[in-house]
Length: 68
Image 1 (cartoon, one colour):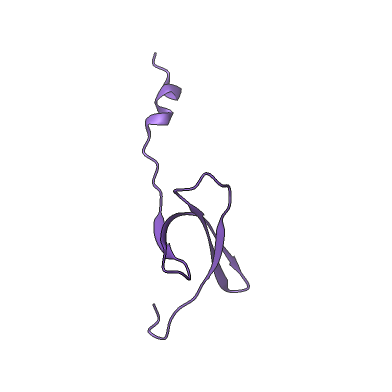
Image 2: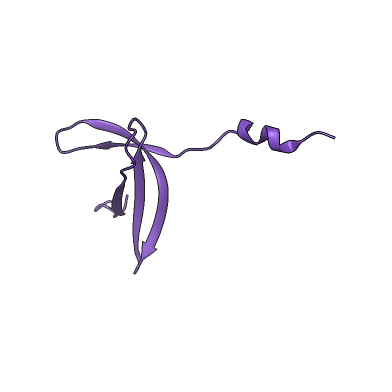
């Protein structure tokens, strides 16, 4: 009998990422760590991939004039 617990760390982890640009034009890659809807508004939580800090960013999801 094989122990399936040994293979659990071998499963690929799907990570959704995006590039955010700060006010100075610097690009950083962030991982989407959560989504939440409050009173009809959608919010997304992102954590920087290239940082050891435990900080995160929460952004409100909005549509532009083209509906995108």
